[in-house]
Image 1 (cartoon, rainbow, N blue to C red):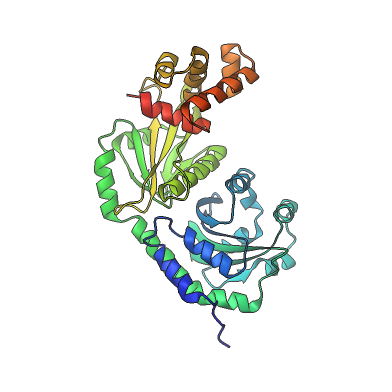
Image 2: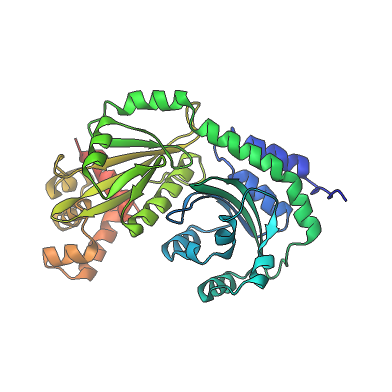
Length: 370
């Protein structure tokens, strides 16, 4: 028996293909789909198989805090849906409860589901290759109840369209004209610079970036993605690039982030992510600049104080933040209490209109690094 469609199936398909030209990508489609099926949240995930990690995500109904907790706690390792999906070929929608009843879930996975109030998830393996799996999931809470067979049938009517739209979106995200035009711009930049598309894949890297990657064994480009040997930094980079890309397509306010790669016996590398606004060339993305302190002189306290109108004490805190030191290390180095350093940083935030350390470091480098 043919399944009945969702009441707004034509609108859903329109939103789906609209994602190909929508600066917000699949976010609007996920919102419409979730509300149409009576769900709580939804994600469209690009999942790396080895090592197992989320490479890219569009989502609806999730907070940034929840996403950070999920990635930081390595919940993907015990996520029943993901660990089941990556072993399957693309097919039809399925429900999580089917597998929960047949398996003995990890205690951490059960606790996570209970804390979030989640009961069931409908999921679809959209694409699958030797390296990656693209997975669509829709969650429901205990109050919303489990997915019923007729609802899964209605979702399956959309599956062929979803599969085609995701494939087309991947092709559009890496168009050669975008790559060649952006390459001409960043090739003249002195610092190592990479262009990431809305999937956080590397569209182009300039000569300085390629030279840096040849020298540094702790990072590399693998399967068109920046890969770190340090797991914690890989997770931090994923979260940062996700937020910056969302900012580039208008889903967040202007969002920049700074990360540091620690190096034994040398100053850390500084990674600054800035959004590339959606345009005719690129459907959103990020510009990643990697600064090498040994090759570039970083702004000092005097320069920072003069530009941002800070006190000497406040500018000293900023100088050491730019160098990659954490607050406790800064307090020890300057001979101050950690509470004093936190207060001084709070004053800096007020004077610079920054709200995060990564944003502050990015602002200082953008203003004073020449």
